[in-house]
Image (cartoon, rainbow, N blue to C red):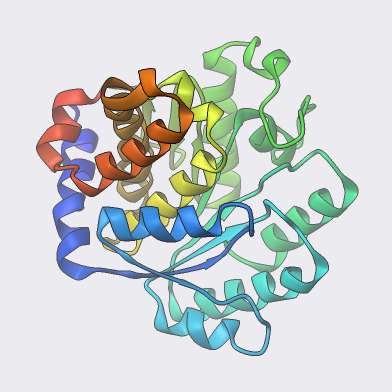
Length: 275
């Protein structure tokens, strides 16, 4: 069994013992689900996006999650202020560049954040990460494009490793096969279920889980693995319990699965390999 896998799964107990405060500046479509998934996994969420207080709130937190889902100019300055406050305090920053490559505003904002804030974990789909790595990407709104995935896994792994080294961060590409790397250590995860893509905000919730795990321990690759694996395993369990009932019941079952997850369940369900 992978040592990375064992160590990341054990962090779930640490998370629930420490109850890290996770500050989100996220999008209004999924903010409630992000708060609830954070509570479900055992962390504590706070959503403060006004630039009059966001930096102060960040300074109290154990991690910061920045999400471009419903991007607007009001929160861009808040993201930058909070990101810089997190850097000053040594608080890990998780950045979810939703829709990078889809519009000039998103492209410019992602560039600003990566230039002015040291991002510790960059979590996105393949098209978003390809764009941020300076490669051609076929962004389809906020979803990854099939054309990008068609190039295969090996080039995506090499691209992720290169970007992780260049940005001194963990890169987490989520999709049919998740790729998580700090440039040296790399783990691929093949958990999840297609129904996750039929519920709004599962990507945002995944970033919240990553932020929760990263707030509980210093090894951020382990934190990213823990968050992504929890979402994938919970998706499988939720489908078994409620998938036949439809997407609404699946969404509730997903939250239930995260709230009852244990390290042993993660280990038993994990489909991973190191590269």
